[in-house]
Image 1 (cartoon, helix red, strand yellow):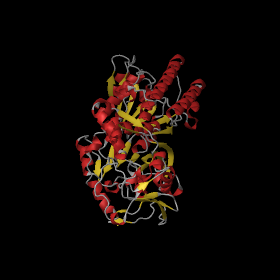
Image 2 (cartoon, helix red, strand yellow; image 1 turned 90 degrees about the vertical axis):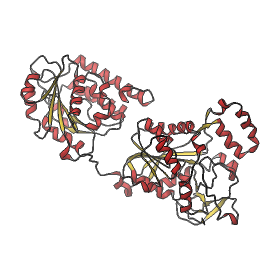
Image 3 (cartoon, rainbow, N blue to C red; image 1 turned 60 degrees about the vertical axis):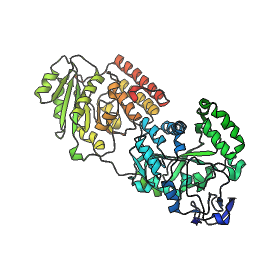
Image 4 (cartoon, rainbow, N blue to C red; image 1 turned 30 degrees about the vertical axis):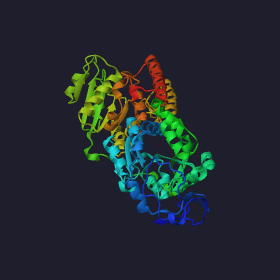
Length: 561
């Protein structure tokens, strides 16, 4: 049954006809089958343009129930023949998303057989999809082992609000019976900092204008026809702000390009006959951007009416009372300050582990006498090597939060309660005690040259890493077990630069950081890095930042994987 519809963007019923190849007896005889790879021409359609907002859409069209049944029953084996090209096209989207620092949880709405999601999974994303076609869902689950695929519409999946870092609508929005409603649903499940990516045929393209109603973008399955203006207007009306609009290149085998060309111009069949004799040529991939596919990346709007969505409830994965907190003490010649440090550690801490890095005093013996769990290195491994042993043993002991505290009494252990609170509440994955907040460093006696060097290095690190911290060099910090299990800290240096490397690893993995102000004490017995080791430390920080930049632009390092 053909149904007349209103404009989805503004609700107007006033329109002009753009293309009309539909005769009266065809109005109730739209196709009951749909294939992704169908590029038939001379279709019976009526395409109209809204007189008020300019949106172009099919009117009349099949009713919603009939359209949904067509998609649920859709099967298209020819679609999977172009797997390599479709994966390459997906990579171009994922590459741009990573360029704008987005990786995490991704949802593909209308995911078809799941090629984009499989590519994303290989690159470290947590992947989800929704798809109407039972055939496509079966392929994604059984052939590609993609388990988080829901058959049905987006609303059927019932995802929680503020759940996804990225949502993708790849060649989908033109098929939706209500694009506006779907975009509003996407806005709810997208995180406040999330990105929406959408591409669709561009009816304002040169190819469309030249070919008219015979343009391959005209299909009975395409209910809407967008250009850059109308797509941006729809996004803005549903609470999104466009960040980037570009044309989208498509990649297929030469054979597939020719197949579609023949569908448009049968006179080119001789090319197919020639290619049949050269199968190695026919299966070569060809990436072409003919400018008839518009792609848009957008973020959630910060208008007043949407602000409540930008402040999601805090995620608490483990109840506070059941979170095990372990303090680790990387120790070297700390016998003279150990008792004072322990005396100020809050009694609520579940476990304290000390790792002695081949001290020349009686640090290990004293720690055992004080009831600590002690691990001793036979040879000095360095500050970073000591931390690796600390974290390995804390995780093995079942810690949910690991606090690293120098046992030289330079840092104030009473601040541990404030340090772990952002992790307990779900706001952060790592929290650093900052000597630079509220003037704590200079008041505690930090030498001016060290204070100034700290500020300069921190400023550079903020610029390169794209985050904001007041200090990267504190020896008083807390990590969630999730953080330590996610980053490859074992690949880091055994030296002082370990502290910077583990932060960079967290940035690469999109961890959440917070800081709390702390007091520090500089006195003769406290450990302190001397001038020359400080210079080496600074040079190693510059080296780490340079590696991060290379990694960001495509060079792989095992340390950051």
